[in-house]
Image (cartoon, rainbow, N blue to C red; front, side, top):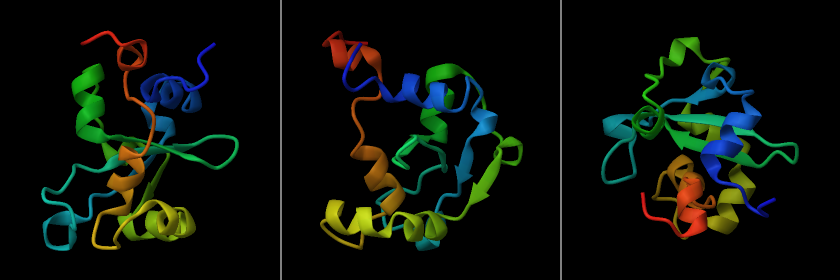
Length: 122
């Protein structure tokens, strides 16, 4: 078994194969976004150790064909609330508080696809 399974597989295992079991994290929006381009929000699950597993909603849609409706998710968090939950982790991970914490944690995860882990191009 891989030491670090791909994020998509890990996410689907944590949500028991249904993105509706995830928590939806709102985009920080155009006016409050610290990233160059606001995201569409993220799907969030936590593993047994409380480590976040995040996938951007628009990326999940492109990979699976499933259109994510935030109202159908098991929970809903603001970007600010998520950043407060993982404040200590972001202190160590982030070079600046000027960047979106949700996007930073998503980017710090292992490769998204299993193909990237195996060195196969998509």
